[in-house]
Amino acid sequence: TDNVFKAWATTSNGSGTWYMPGEEYEVESDVTFYAIWEEYTLVNTYTSLVNAVNLRNSYIKLTDNITHAIYNEDAIYQHRLIFDENRKTVLDLNGYTLNVTNYNEYMANEISWISVYEQHELTIKNGSLIYSNENVNTDQSSYGAILVSGNATLITEDVNIRNKKNGSAVRAHDNATVILDGGEIYTLSGWAVFTMHTSTLILDGDVQLHIENSSNASS
Image 1 (cartoon, rainbow, N blue to C red):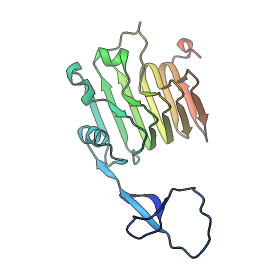
Image 2 (image 1 turned 90 degrees about the vertical axis):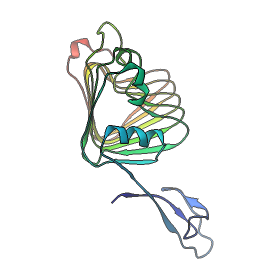
Image 3 (image 1 turned 180 degrees about the vertical axis):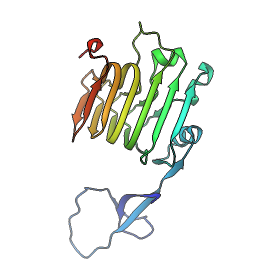
Image 4 (image 1 turned 135 degrees about the horizontal axis):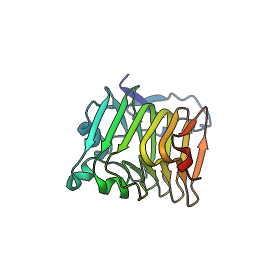
């Protein structure tokens, strides 16, 4: 299906009170609830994915594998996936792989590919993320694939995240929360998941954390 359940409403046109999944309702009289559905934004290219993120679409679904390379420093913000503001986004990989290779040295050493900020809640599910820095100075620290900060939350459900160079596959700062449910989190060297500044890591289900060059890992 290309639709996702969003909430229950007390009117058929959705203008009444909404009740979110898991929210309790005290029954005082007969009432009819109506399901509110929202369409996924379907994407099959990296440009369409970036556009969907920038347009703040709440539900995004891949319909094919996506491979992308980043070169130009001037256009760097056209390549990053930035999830900000106090809202929620679901990125459904739909069994496909999102594979990005970065050749830009500034992005390799200073910022991350996917950033989750400002109390945003990002859920990524059902597929694989692969990120590789091919222009990284190994003497410098790389933020790696995903950075979560500023009271934001990252939830993964059956997702394999592979950071194929140094740095963190997932990095959490400043009261961030990371909830991993299934899948494998892999990095070549560094940390599979790095948390600091009162951030929280929750492992829910069978999650595998893997560091290829464990002799270079820090904890």
